[in-house]
Length: 338
Image (cartoon, rainbow, N blue to C red; front, side, top):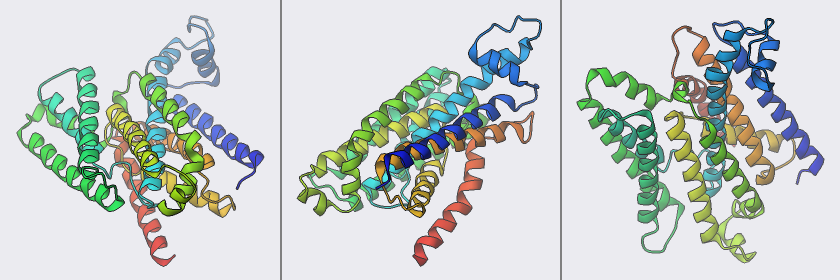
């Protein structure tokens, strides 16, 4: 078990990475921003001082800061959900999207776009679709009061396949004027984030709810029989993990669309790093560390997505996939030869 001091050092270093990522995200762009402009925008002042760049301050506060906060929240939510799903399924390569929640959100969001609804209704429909998919998977996988990882996984795959067919149908009948927006949503797009506070609140709530059960998660990762022997209510813990991971995933997908590989790669790499440092697979450290790392990674990826081909912006999901695919193949090969 890691000592308290070492755990705090790891979290402190990751917090510094988060701060550095935020400064990069707020400073990068077509409008030049000085360090003084950043301080003015973040810590006070209306930008009306003769020494202030009023345009830069307004761009930071109105555009870059909400997007940066939203990207960090989404990355943290996906990494946290991925870590929880890997414990639930006892598979270090599990993904928060494996149970079809993102597919349900995609169906809801694309239907709202097809009907020409506003962004608020699109987000509401996406969350409703994700919640419906969660209930379907939970109901089918737990219909006869039995709960196995194989049954849960197969149910999620089937629901995801059905949602994929529905998405393909919607795309085939959608007018051309709406296709670009739909495709950007499906690929993951942080440019639409204007109100990051709900995602940040759900991220904080999910982490607060998960950490008190970190000890139980450590034992559950070693097997159901051991957990039951030690007096842990395995079924209730699994239900809690499932619903908490589903809530985090639904919030992330609702906020920025389907962004892949963050929930798969970040928890696994964090776990490998902690194990190499001799700290094992301790969820008390892994969950907050993966959350900070996932938020930083998506924040940096989104910054690159909006600047690498400026003024054109790329869907951030494209960059995370380009990064995630080779890393996933490396991890898969490593698991094969382990």
